[in-house]
Image 1: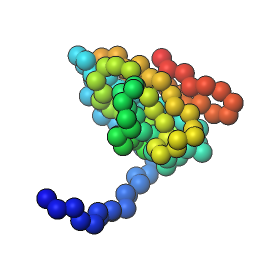
Image 2 (image 1 turned 45 degrees about the vertical axis):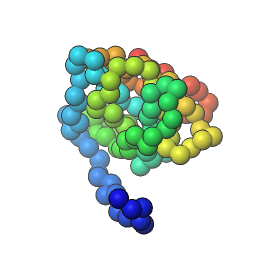
Image 3 (image 1 turned 135 degrees about the vertical axis):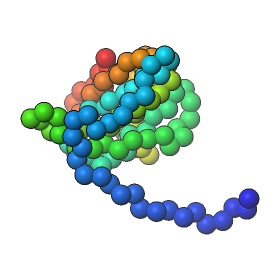
Image 4 (image 1 turned 90 degrees about the vertical axis):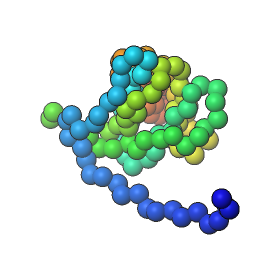
Length: 122
């Protein structure tokens, strides 16, 4: 196949999501990651990679999520093989890189660092 011009289509950004609106595929050696972020990152893309590997563009958007009587901002990776990962704001080489451990059959929750501070994963 010959290289030609790439066609880029604008992404449609969905509105806020409510409770139970994300599907996770976990179990066996697969887990999920929920990254809670500050409001300023709404609409940003969080990129993830296996630790030590090159960034390959695998990403999710930080979205406004209505949870009970609260509003949170989060990106969700719904199914990842267990292992160690790094995450960053996509194409932000100067920003933080957050280490994340994914365990099969569970959901890892991470709070994105805000100035000052560090991210924490559980």
